Each structure stands twice: as structure tokens, then as C-alpha cells.
Length: 222
Image (cartoon, rainbow, N blue to C red; front, side, top):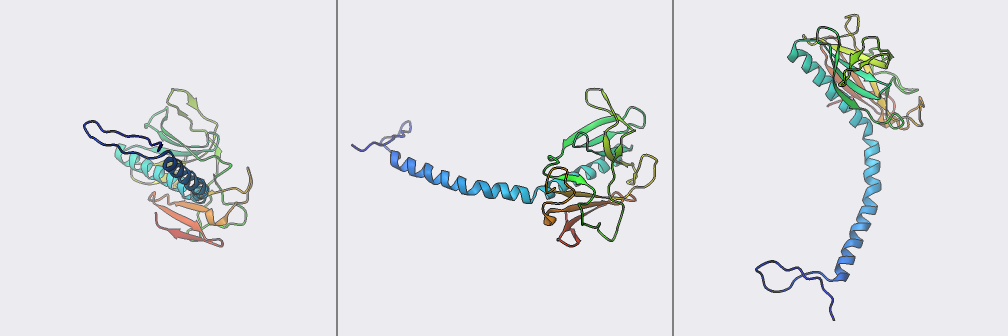
């Protein structure tokens, strides 16, 4: 007796379907394909994690700059190491400053946003100062109305005319580095080919994206 699964359509005559053997073969093939594909997908994700994080940061920088020009007031971007997040803050022209958006960053054990790893020199030109973090003295209110301050952050204030300044109102240019540590809290990168850098030009708010080729940074289009 031929054991077959029957699939009937309403209003149609006849029988059609797949045998149990055919279903088992199909499922076995799918299982093999998945077993082969998953390691490649995971590996691909690891290789491009630095790019993903760097592009996320650049997108938020551009959005913050655009908000400042559109709303005609100063907007602040913070890279918050305490919360491991990007913060977009409206300075409102008056106190208190208010949080607009919080974008989580990748786990610091996988990707760091920091100064360059050991043995890697800054892009030159422009050879701007490396990003540096300090205790937040500006503070802001989060979405629940709680005042947040004292975190370890790097901050850039985007003015309505397009310039980027520090807390004292001085133009600020800096290079941000994104790279995978070889171990948690390590200052050495797991792979030099995965190191990325973002240069922010304070006078115009323009960005330049860099990829490390193992010996030097090369400008990349993004």
C-alpha cells in the first residue's frame, strides 16, 4: 500500500501530494543546507560588525546635524560609555536638555568605540585629535524626566549653522575609532583589517570614513 499525504483543493477533483519518503528527503536536505550556511552567516556578521557600528554612528551624526539646522538650535551627540549607547540630545536653548533618541551600541566585548588600538596610528592627513572621553557635566533629562549626568561620554554639539563645537563653544574636530578587541578590555585589536575610523570636521560637520588595510588608514566612500 502506497502511503501518501493527500492535499485537496475545494472544488477540484483528483488527488495530489507527497510521499512520506519525499518529505523526509526534503527536510533532510534543508537541515544540511542550514547546517552549512549558519557558520558562514555568523562569520560574515563578525567580519562586518565594525562597518555596521561605524555606519550607525555616522548616520546618527548626520541626523543630529540635520536636526540642528532644521530646528534652528543646538543639538548634542554623545557617545556614552557608561550606557554603551549613542545619545541624541536637544539643548532646547534653555535648561534642561532633553533626550531625543537613544541608540544602543554593540557589546564592548565584541566592538569598541574608543581611541585607536595599540600599534595603530591616526589617519594623516588630517591627523586630528583622537576621540577622548570625560565625565559628563552638561547632563540631560531622559524620557522619564530623570536627570542624567556624571556618565563617561564624548560629546559634540551641532549648531544651527552647521559647525560642531565643544561645551565651551570652541570648534571641535576628532577621529572616532571602531574596532574588535582581541579580549574584553584589551587594547589590541582582534583583526587589524576590521579597524574603522570616522573623522568629524568641526568647521562644517562633514565626515570621512576610513578603513585600516593592516598598515595605514585608507579613505572609503560611505
